[in-house]
Length: 241
Image (cartoon, rainbow, N blue to C red):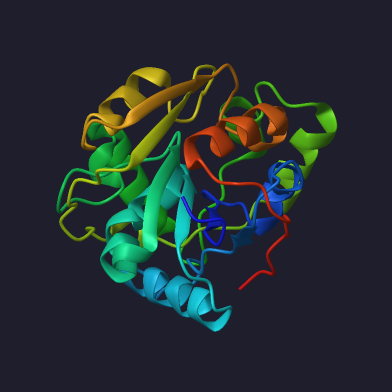
């Protein structure tokens, strides 16, 4: 694969481009992290994809490998449609893959679907889990310092990426799904359901919780480089959108 290919990191719910800095610093390859512009009432998977591709075009980024964590998985169909041949591989990290034509909440159990819809109605300025929930679901294997950072920097999420159906998901021939074996947010059995919606992806495993990029950035970076099959070049941290 061409050394001109850039690894593009997209974060999950509540996080930002900052969460990928440790991983990017471990990579001997061109890499950027972008903020997903999901925190407005007008945000949808397609509008977010438009903004992200526009940012890549502005930076004159050519071929890309997308690394999508958690909630960012809902962006894959829209990004794939817009990037076309520029998209060389998708690497999903404990990512949510909705059923074709469904939304993020449609990938959850019936009770959780109802709860999330109600919570978004009750929180029109955005939804933030309680610190106790964040500690349980996101911080189960993090240091106290990293746990506090995740909790203090968590940004309220609007309903767009959760409730808007995604475009029909065309199977991706070049995909990797990284299972996180200690994940309390998207447990391993649910990750199995997600990866089954892809077209026979390569499946890799890491023994971390949901925030693998903080818990073990070196192991995650090594796995991404192996899956990306890139020749080393200068790494760089992306500027937020």
